Image (tube, one colour):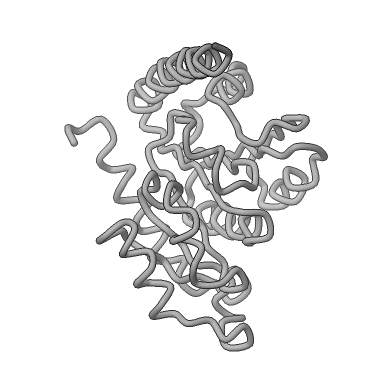
Length: 225
């Protein structure tokens, strides 16, 4: 009898989370604030990718902010603050994902009208974050060339729930003997037609296309899907 009870509790928790997330998204829409949720395994270069994104958006004159989720430490938040953007850290103390109410609490005293973009760097995990809506408009799945080409096949849930994908650390592709065509084919087999950005935070390659995508998405906020 315990198993059905656990499932009932989980369903209730997820329902409450989704209700909070929908309310947040409606608010973001009204404000014209594009929210992006970054999901990947640890070591993919998610923080470097986000740091480069923040810097480049600010250089375009955009106002940006970020929230970072980690089990412990504020290392990533301090690093992202080097961009000059407002950054806050959520320490989950063992929880493997962020939840909508955690994000809502961090945003409670922020004047969101001041921002055009908000980025949420989720806890490094390829499974747990896929079930939790954070009110985002764009969920980005990141895959590093150092991880191998089969991650989309091993963790299809992430790529199935993502809107776009980014391959990171492409400057290391040759050294890692990364099979680009196979990686692209694997992503496409899980999520056909998904937009994929091939990027390097070190060289800056791929970021112009990524930022142009964000700009286009923000321009459609509040419009019918």
